[in-house]
Length: 343
Ligand code: NAI
Ligand code: NAD
Ligand code: ISE
Image 1 (tube, rainbow, N blue to C red):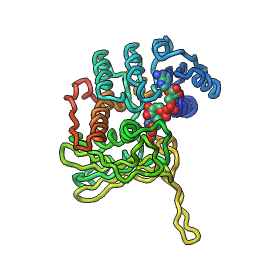
Image 2 (image 1 turned 90 degrees about the vertical axis):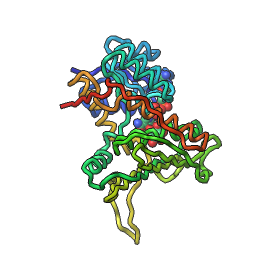
Image 3 (image 1 turned 180 degrees about the vertical axis):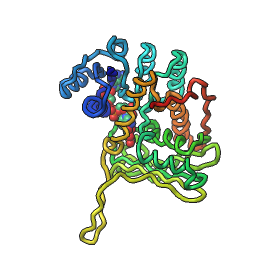
Image 4 (image 1 turned 45 degrees about the vertical axis):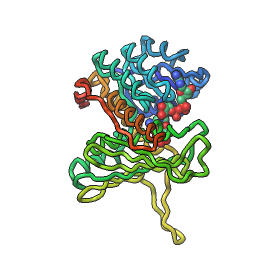
């Protein structure tokens, strides 16, 4: 059986995911697309020679009879409405991060899904599927470095456009660390604080860049996360977990090392599309396979999206106040405690 997929938002990552589902992955087919810019949706159908209908809006796409699952790759502020419409139509939905740009929005999704009574939603937190992060988690879970005490990480982009504002360093960028780190160290966040180092002259007026975000967990682990989105030299993701017995590092992407003319050289990636390309493949294949085998997606849940939103709201508040702000999570509903395993 093929999972028929409708795509809301045919921008950068929408096109990437359409290409991988069409050319690389198995078991899924793009049958519908929509974009607020209708010409962009039509162009994608032509460019990738899709056998897909272009719908005028998300509501008509999610209610189309032949659409089994919806891929939300619109921009962040549109996600909540897109996902709620899909749940109302009883469709599976893979939503790119963030699930919603506010905790209230993510909570509304959690409530709608719980009321529906079956898991429909998977959030695009692809780092949980990245080979390097999976190895790092295995090392921590096997107690290879003892109790984790501190984490240092870095999220650098070469540049961003004029629409990227100070809060997006959290809502759009740090959101990946927020999700992957509590999963990695099996702990919950307690408080957050944001520091602004000297501003890069490359950052435009509405963006404070770089930023240092300090997250403290309930057990007392301190995470120091740097977001620097005008670093110029490349797309660089680093993570280092310091434990009682040793230190574990996220592996660098494989790249040839040359020794020549008195220099040791290796390439650094420039584009986020390449850095997590394999992880995007695995997460979407898992979404397709899990629905087919178990009738539910098994990846990051709406509750994971909610945890990320509550933490990101606290970080945005901390950006404004300069103070340590608490992360106040509600009790996890029993609905999200079940573990779904794909054989
Ligand atoms: P983009 O701006 O290139 O594409 C967004 C597209 O959605 C645009 O074509 C826009 O016209 C369309 N759109 C916006 N609102 C819409 C709506 N209500 N209905 C239909 N279409 C709508 O943005 P990009 O970079 O593709 O990002 C899209 C989403 O993917 C964002 O949520 C972003 O956070 C996420 N993303 C995730 C990445 C990851 O590593 N997981 C990487 C890049 C983006
Ligand atoms: P983009 O701006 O290139 O594309 C967004 C597209 O959505 C545009 O074509 C826009 O016209 C369309 N759109 C916006 N609102 C819409 C709506 N209500 N209905 C239909 N279409 C709508 O952005 P992007 O870089 O592709 O990012 C899209 C999403 O993917 C964002 O949420 C972003 O955070 C996420 N993203 C995730 C990763 C990742 O690493 N997981 C990487 C990039 C982007
Ligand atoms: C983008 O939306 C992503 O999700 C990328 O993974 C991230 O590195 C980048 O900063 C975001 O803008």
